Image (tube, rainbow, N blue to C red; front, side, top):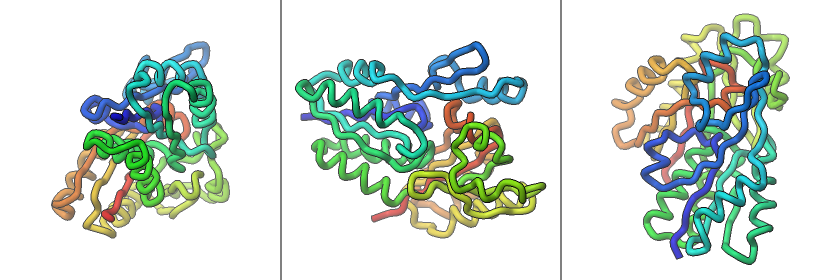
Length: 278
């Protein structure tokens, strides 16, 4: 039986990748004052960051409803098995909604749930690897195993301008220890054991970007590099073009950190998701 991939909108995969592999993306909900948006449906990254910078409102996110997952699974239909890949359960209740929907459909179709233990660039890596194996004709078990294997080895490191947005959103995790000592320091964060954690701190943004470049090129045999940004597209493109000549056998995927993740990262985030070879 053919396998289809479902994920949620915090995967931040570019639209062309989603369409190429037939991935179903279930959106989170973004609340901005009195306005409500479906992530990547009613508002894209460019519109979101412009609104974020201009607005005094503090946006909030909420996980997809059980009904939204149930509808997404049923739209795929019982003629397919499903591998459903989601944001770390330590960062969102999204996986819980998906789990309840799966229970309700237990007699209709086979669905395997994957906790990616990460978000955005890293989660996109997990969903994409699953989709590639599915497109090659992999079974439910093979596709799920590929997703879990990638989740175990993907590395995500990101540069943020400030920790204020993470603090406001309650997703700051172990990076809380960096508050109060930042001043002009630019924090580098990573996702460790499913939560946001401090990685390094650098005095200026230019030095922080260079540090991120050093991290990305530590292993020049990487299978895939995901690069994401928040409202600083030119900087991200320049960063990727610096990497390419050093890693000629690596696939690069450039995207944007979308609204649901941008609520917590803030504008001008620059991050990498690194996937090594087996």
